[in-house]
Length: 192
Image (cartoon, rainbow, N blue to C red; front, side, top):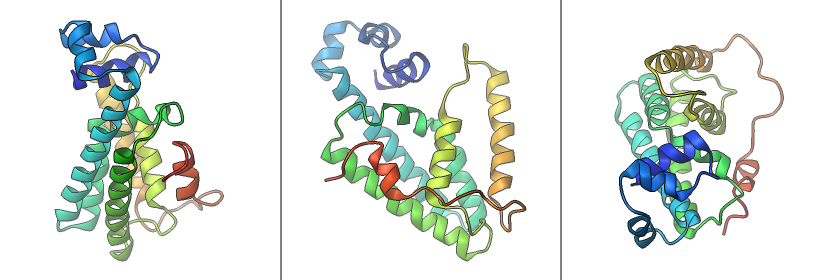
């Protein structure tokens, strides 16, 4: 049911009817509403799951002996999981305490991964954890039209180009200041 909901919301938008989720999951509306009383509750659960997967991806990256390969694994895993596909819901649903806690854990572990890559000299010094998170958001969104192997191929190709752009030393000066954690959190609302 949750996989179906993630698919429907990321393909059709967050205004998609709950009936489309039930149809995709092969369950009745009653089953869906017994599990999640509201669409907002379902979206909140999906956000927590996405952040939990992000934490797992960061931990896998940290477990990798090579700092660049670990960072690359983290980014590729999050994009494959479409972890950032729910970002457009920011500011439209109430953020639960569980969401804030999970987000903080994801942020703290990702900061460690990025710091390790910086210390090893393999990640551009001017790239922040938020830059990487926002990049993953962009790659997490589905391409227009029905899913296809061509879309996946193009996404992987562009992701490889983007990852090369993150490598130190970096040929182009990045414009402006990096996004701040406060700006990022403000998209979701005030943190407790």
